[in-house]
Image (cartoon, rainbow, N blue to C red):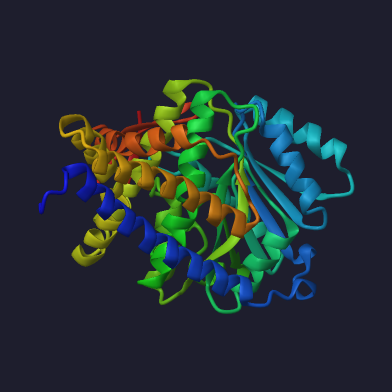
Length: 387
């Protein structure tokens, strides 16, 4: 190794990968910021906001209310379950408090076994949508009018446009802050950086938009009913029909209550399991690219720490310190450029990355997930059954 320690070599490799990803993300960010968005051409009343709602999160009324305030002229379709008393109470309360907003509540029976509850509700609601644009928005996410305009404008060159997630952790305890750190550190690097190499292969299921006519021409949501990872299924379906995906820099702010460490682990397990489904569908070359860009850095971070313990030296310590400063600065730089700065917690950020390989191993070996009050066994093809 030419006299250099393991920690130094690993730090160098980590720095190169981070720099490449950051430069690619920065280039895409600046390209999109330079592209004009005609806000006047996007009429909010032409957008149907489809929100599948499931009660149980204490922040649900606040988040839904924030979305109403941000998009007051849009047409809202709130999709609730007949057996979800908490969800029905929340939407009834908000509907009464906002009589000026066009809100339609769709009550749905339980989804059949093997059918995605979210997609089931979307599929039942679509025939009743008459707005030119459909925006699918999770019930824990909020979107600004400017972000909506960017999404709709992107549909001029693509069949589906998706937003860039950011988590709000204000008032959250340690598990919630750790979850937010994972998303905020990685959003731009995960969604924007790969665009320098290839078109998007998936979407952010928390928030995406399609023109209603195009969605119906693709068969609506019916082709996705039996896939648990509905965002991946939608992306695959659009691409299979020759469609294009636009990954935009439109920020969608997500706020979910994370009760405790077990809740955090369940959420990360679900995301990582869905990531394994995405990887299985990619060609070998794409798997290798994703593995190097996203899977290797956490392993290098582990190797740096272990190498420094087993072979302590001043050069290794200096290299690792430099890398930690770099990885603290890159997310801050990207978040600031996006206009969505998040609290910087360097120690929590390192812990979040060190835990990623453990979450991935958990997802590879445990195929049962818990989604709020429901449990599903996920098959390798993306299908599932209730447990």
